[in-house]
Length: 193
Image (cartoon, rainbow, N blue to C red; front, side):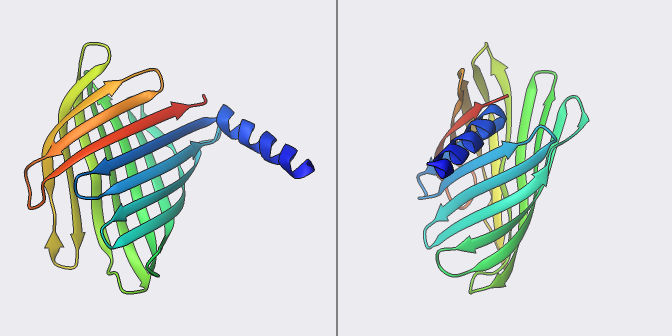
């Protein structure tokens, strides 16, 4: 019973802070789930799952929230990566958010270094989304991403529509430019402070 009380106290303190959850799925069998926690002192904990055909990666990372300008927020992050298939790696990433004159840009750029297993290192931009509001809840724009492993590039570009609500947002993109077409749907949830 004491353990349960400690767990509930810890959970309630985490909920009272800044929490962000993101879920994505795509026509390419890409799947993504992420939980990010930001402490009052700007320490960031990020745990995510990234799935593609033949690869199931789990990442656990730490970082720090920086605000060099009122319109710019940066999250440098370092991760350990483990796959269901037995690979191990280390990842260095930068999450960035910028708002200027109504335009919003969000990007996640990461380099993963293979440490053990069969998968080679990779570089990924997932994703650079640029939007502009149309009214109070709707945003439209574009989504760009790429995956680079060994000598293979997989850039993707296409339109994006975002519908904001009191809990977060729904995002739909159709990346139709690039070697692999992808229809993607995502949901974000933000809670806490």
